[in-house]
Length: 365
Picture (cartoon, rainbow, N blue to C red):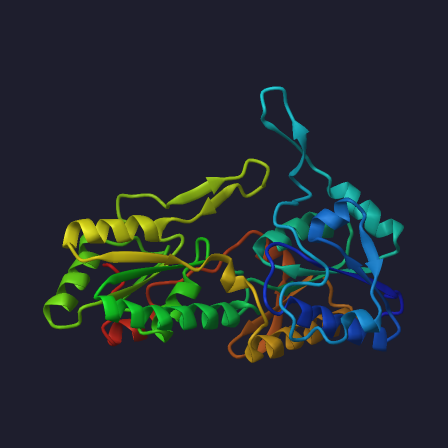
């Protein structure tokens, strides 16, 4: 182990995610066992900007493996490269690059390595700090499973389980009332949750952001199922899905956020269109943040622990500025800077897409 690594800091950036505490636990306990001091940065990069950092003890990281969320808190609005510091007289937001402030706070606290747990946004925030001389190790977190460089992120399997359970319940009420039901799941621009939850729940239609759908083809599925005795249809729809010659539905715009677009509402629009075009009663369900909450499933607890362990192996070997990754069924790592701001999307030839098609699932095309 490099002799000069004596103090590390951990932050959890972006949205909360089941399994974050499992990573914190794995990293902190390993570090403490090897005589390192561990600092916890509160509320992600916002806490680093505001210098809100506290020591972590064994008691702080014990008993948290099964707990959802993050004991350190998080923020998906604080990008040091584009941080809101006020407003102009016309109401527009004043942005400032405060990356140097973050680096200064880390240096003042004697942090040797920063463990950044997060998705593509978190890695993008860490990348300029690496260029400014801050050694980092990245751990891939996001329920969306869309971080470039890894085939799996912790939190994803929990989100899929929650979405699948919800769609299972929707199936019975849809059948009882002979309705078309549209269930909207999260994922931003990536359709991984929709694809896996849709297949796991035997949804009749799966709509993904990567493949614009033909509204009439979706309606054809609803009509066809009604005509042959299946008097209900369940549609799993990713929040970023949109019709051909249409646009993604935006729920709201947050001008104070570096990533201001908040997707949402496609299920409401789609259910209304289905009812209007087919005459079949339709309803919609938006699962929203319930997919990010609660205790992680056992697979995510194990994966998060493996990721935390590999992060510490990289640190102890002096292999810094690397992102822990899962590729071809095993742990590995990639250059952390290459994953910054990049997304891994569903491709048409993905084996899961092909498997869904083989059992008659429609993708609205």
